Length: 465
Image (cartoon, rainbow, N blue to C red; front, side, top):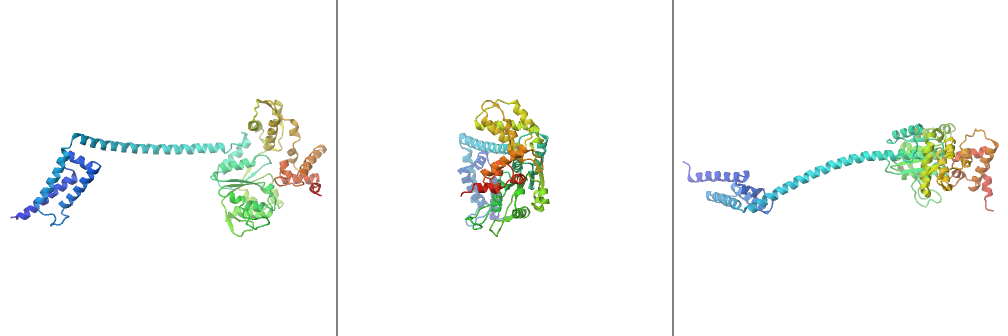
């Protein structure tokens, strides 16, 4: 037979197991369940009590501290007494407890639902913003390029293809055709659009300073170099540099430019350290660079590096259907600046613009419209026909082998000599005669040689005695 102590231990273990099961599995009345499922100080206090009870019932304390069937009975009685207190709580307290829990759960669900909706709307807005930005970029990419002719659309199609790449582009075309606008359109359509677009007119820079202008110089590199100066290539790092009239570069600068295109590095004037640069190069010229390579004024390896993707901009006379659109565009632009309004365009002016060859291309048309807006006094826009016939760029745009009448030659000489007199015989540079006549320095030099004009006479005539 089992001893009394063995029987007591078995009953104690059985009762302990039942009590633990009561605590773990929630086998107690509803009021007790609310007690342990509710947040707040009551639950925290009850949880601590339960943990202590379970610890004791599981035998984790020593036999000296916890021993005997009577203690088990006492613990179970105490637990049931707690549950009875909860059970006898007022209905109002229990209802408030349930309402708080329900509201908390509903609020949590509503918040999670709101976050999901916000996430969906954010993704939709992001996608719509990308589509809208792409459309805006496509429109603004050609915002200053006006025309619908097939010749122009062919150019814009090539621009769209090359813009997303990092390839070098060579833009060719007569002076005044808008080569820089094409270069800017390429930049706007590239991944470099958020970075700098640096434009350099190589023909306007003195040969002795062009290397310093493009690549910068170190302090003390030459007389007057009192501090380090960053060149245009460093300023354009991460973006695009546009080299207009690239055919005018001297031989030593061509070598340095070739190194930039091949190695993506250069040295400042007077420096010994190589400077790394990440820049896209777009070049433009109105010269025949293949002929320049043939006569030795342009390095062939540089030409091939620049001519990765050629784009030829057509002259205005090959896109006559765009002339009236350009006329309206510039009238609106300059009339707004001058605070004027024109109700109509004189019919004779329309016929004149259609029939004229525009040797100075869009730049000539733009200048004549601006001048006409200034002098026009009523609401009818008209242009003086003499401005088109006597335009200095008409003479400058003709090829050196053209036949000239005596009157034309005399008029051309008068224009060139007047420009040289105003600039003291200087041809290139921002204040030179070529800039005043708005023709490339190389073109003006050819005219001077053909007309047998001596530039030195104008330097001496303006010398101070």
